[in-house]
Structures are given as structure tokens and as C-alpha cells.
Length: 210
Image (cartoon, rainbow, N blue to C red; front, side):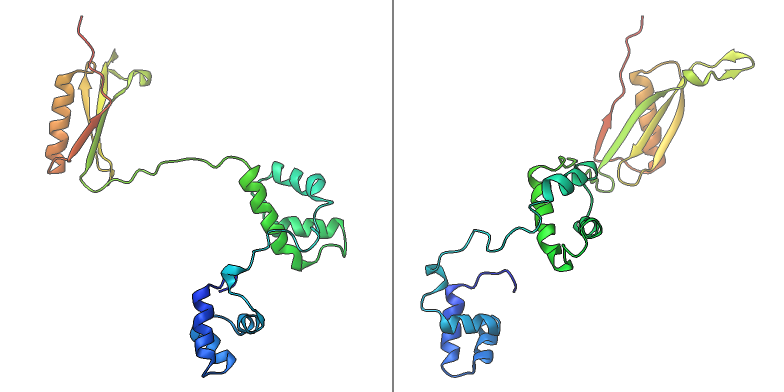
């Protein structure tokens, strides 16, 4: 697999198969490529005994335009794709940036987003199982200025819903919020639903009577 470091065990397995098989056959049995097999035949030590290279072997082709042209574009539009940035560079600097530089630019953009990009939105998905949670609250209707025979109709709505299926029950409550209104509304909602949820949460606020 490209980008995967060959282990000592794979080398030993390849060498064992190499005693009785051709190079390509031994490589296939060891799970490595023929190119890796040629390197193993020329190596004198195991992979664990060789030091890995962490420095850049080629000059960065974007060093002159990164801070002045690419970063300002990323700051103004952080979701810009590397291929779009490369095409913009190719238009501004003809024959300087080849299509083969795309992977290098993609790596630079990933590093910039990780180190200096905008923070990612944090959210906690809420997944509810059917019948697990029921929710209820009261809704004030005063702003609608409903009247009956010319007289103001003072009322609120009791609202119950199942979190998973979004099944709802609504009924009119004359007066304000109270424990009695909540109990009656919840009982009627559960009768209509044909059962009770395992958990019930309410944001109803019981108001004291004066």
C-alpha cells in the first residue's frame, strides 16, 4: 500500500519466499510491491534499523507565493479547494505551476487549516430511540390578540411531542401555567399516543397563584 512503511516481518517473509520463488512472486506473497522487493534486495539492514527522513528533499515551489497570495485567499474563503488555488496561480503565473504540484499544495492547505484555519464547529448530535423521550411545554398566545365575541380570549397552549417520531399533541389551556394543566395535558397526550414514553422532560414553569 502506498505510504505504508514495510515492516521487518514483511522483509523476513519476503526473503524466505525469495529462496524458492522469483522476485515478483515472493513480493506478492509478502504483500509488498516489486519495487519494494528490489530495494530490499539491495538493502543490507532491516527497515527498523534505518532512520526515517523528516526533512524536505525538494525545494518548496510555493514558498514565494504562500504568504502573499495563497494565505490571503484562504483567510477570506477558508473552504477553497487546493485545485482552485492552483488554477488561480496558473492564471497569475503562466507556465510556473504545473498540475503535478497539486498534491504538494493540498498538503500545505491541510497543514494551514489544522494550524491556523478557522475553528471547527462543535456540535453534539442528539439521537433518540423510538418511545424513549417525551417533551412538553406551554406556549403563550397573548401576542395573537385572539377574541371571542369581541372579548379577549386569555389562554395558552399545552404542547407534547415524542422526540424520535415528532408525534405531537396540542390542547388549549384557559388561564396560565399550572401543575394541574400540565398533568391534564400530559395525560390526554399519552392517551392519544396509546402509551407512555420511558422518559418525560418538561420546561413548564409552575406559577404561584396570588
